[in-house]
Image (cartoon, rainbow, N blue to C red; front, side, top):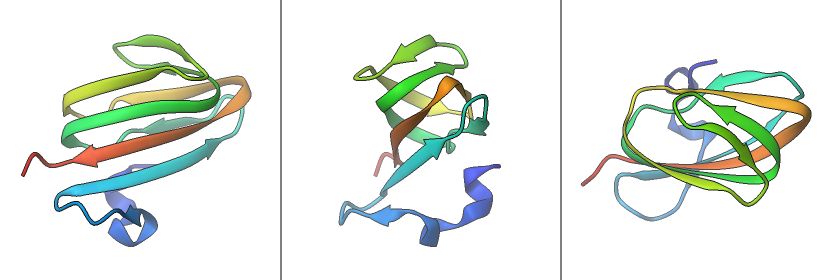
Length: 90
């Protein structure tokens, strides 16, 4: 599912112009696309995921993204919970 198709009403507003916080609980083996953004930050709150272009990320790991182009995120066997900040750079 492409986050751009969800619309901003599916995310939490954080009173920071140009920023949106996405939270996801991924089932084992599920694949999602991160939102397109000038800047992004992905935090793995629980479980293990593989991020396209970055590799394996475990609980507590974080990645900063620039010029994010809907990279693929895949949850491992135990599933995962992630937070993704999407920022447009303004």
